[in-house]
Length: 73
Image (tube, rainbow, N blue to C red; front, side, top):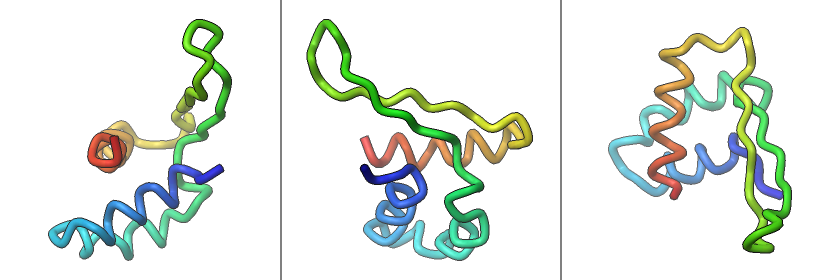
């Protein structure tokens, strides 16, 4: 399973204006990301992901990282 950290890094590498943010993501590392756990949706039988924001994570950082999530989707 690819973690959120890797998704964020992949998007950063694909979209030119975001490449300058790769060093920030690297500094945060995998431990700086929200937790993502997969489960199978009983209605659709597809894998879905629940994302849990760490308590210590500042809301502005969380919102900044959500941009990468939106671009990934």
